[in-house]
Image (cartoon, rainbow, N blue to C red; front, top):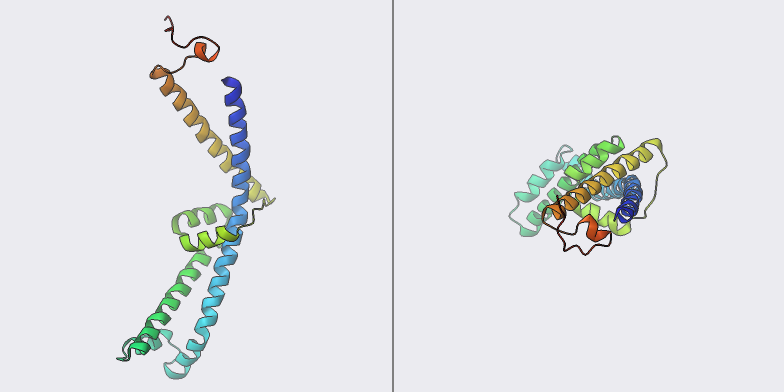
Length: 184
């Protein structure tokens, strides 16, 4: 059993370090994806910005309100669509500001404030990579060892629970019948 645990925990450590080492490349691809979406939304808003500059003193919000106050349903719906584009641009700007930090804060920001739809879209196109910067390697080692320690904790808790519930004993695992109770 000790050989299996020893082999298994080394495999878990290696896999955890490799997986954690791929996180920086996912974050970089996520940022690129978010930046592309922001550029597209801003390009879509550009004609409306020109109209707002000409008719509403440069305020896109005033243009949206003008549309929303209209009794014409089509014009009103255009105002709602324009407001959704403005909201999307604001969310993407905030996302890009949140990702403008070191790797640890980027990871934390994505865990707490990430866009699930954007993460899913990024995952669909994700190309794994292992960055070799000092920060990326330290991140991979730190997260890999943390995941490995969690695995070891689960392993030892499971072993303790098995011993406590009368599961297989060391004698059974070493070739005993496992049915004969151990003498104190």
